[in-house]
Amino acid sequence: MTLRGLTFLPNTREALIRSENVLFFMFGSLKLAILFTFKLAYFRVWLQSLNLSMDLQESFTLKGIFNPADEPDNQLTGELTFSQQKGTDVTLLGTFDRKNAAGSKLGLYHGFSTNGKKMTLVDNSVSLESFSMPGIAQSGIHSRYLFIGDWHNSSESLIFDAFRFTCKDLNYWLHISGFEKPVYNNDDHEVVIRYKKPGTKLFPINDDFNLYIEFDYYGPPEWFVPSEKITVEQKPYLKIMSRKGKQHFEKFMKCYFSLLSFLSFCYFGYPVTTECVFQREGVDADSKPLKDIELFYWASMNFEKYIEHRDRQCFLIRLIDIMEIFPTILQNWLPLKDKIKVGINMLTELFMYRNSPIELRFLSMAQAAEHMHRQLINDQDKIILRQRLEELIAHIPIDVKDALLSDPAKFIAAIKENRNFFTHYNEKQANKAARLEEVYLLSEKMKIILLTVVFKELGIPNNDISNIILNNGIWLFNHLIKIKSEEKFNGA
Image (cartoon, rainbow, N blue to C red; front, side, top):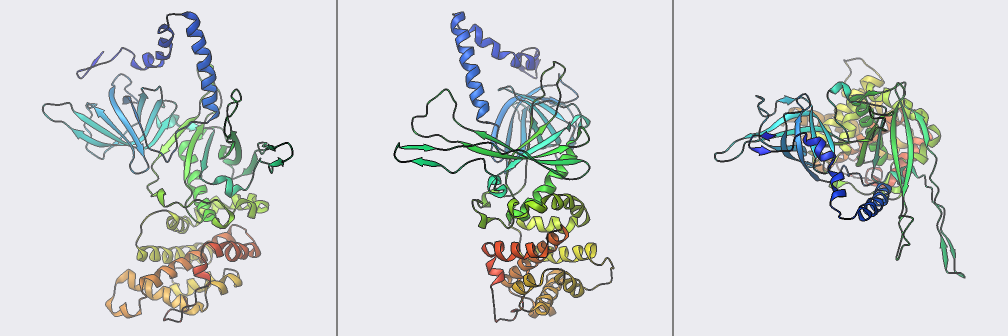
């Protein structure tokens, strides 16, 4: 088969899939081949025990062949690259003879890598069309979602039973461990470390999904004696499981991103997802269990700014802090997210690692306050900002209000005056505007007030909210609780 000047084996995919069998003929001795296969099988079991899936935060490159999902014989060689800086891009040698301008939307694409990975590219657009003389034409595809593990022929076929993910420092947020305290026997010079995997925990989310907290663990292979040290690692996962059979991946993604918003409030920073896997129960046409399908996507933020959360002071809320009421919180979360979607999205944005100007962060908090007041307290349109802020502040526990605001009236006036100035940039109001460092403090205090409102709407009791904000928060924003400026905006 010749493809635009390049030659391939017929049925390239099948040939690549069967390439492992060629190893057998590379050995002159049948015994040597059997021994190699036997050892390779053990090696694969050990690799699987290490869970060597690709990390969502790591960059990688895969070379292979690619084709439109509806044209399996229209293949081009190319190179796929993924990174959290740019997302998924495929550079192809040649073009598919489809008249698409740069940026135009494309259908699904399939790929098959040289190391045997099946790929489906979803939500694609043209990123490159070039040709030089002399030379070979090049084309490019940018993908929003990259599925690795299977081919899907249409958007309708992207249906699954579950979606599993894990984040950095999730063990510390859960505060659930299968390890026991080490036992040291100094007389016998012995140390005993015991681990037992914690049981799976189930929490209903809504009529469509359940949330499972699952655990796995990894250690050294049992057929080797460690010479220097051993590592046993507990790895937790959050699994969104469908309660209504297979569902489209977009419904899973909506629930997933919503849970990330909740976790960002708990982490007081956007959590860094390291692994996403779709799961489908049952067997395929050859009676083989269906494999997990890995998902890669571009999160469009700078995760290098993420700060490790390795102790309780790093979290605003840990699961252990709300375990008894977590089922109620979880079932209230998605309806609340839908009700005040704009406000929660603006709050979540402030926890993302983006270099937003202080003025925009402040304006987004003022807009979020108006939106949340309208949706939760009073939906009348003709209410001035001052009244909305007064009623929002009255909605939070008194001790939280007293800790944040030494003078609520001055705080409200400062919000109103700076909102007006940064919205209209009227020079007549410039003398009333605060310095940028003061604007930053105003927006940060507004953020804490709005978080407190969200916690109350989720069903967290006032005493627990006070404990979260004043005891846990003292490690995260003591500059907001303790600051006592005697300057113009000392009420802020």
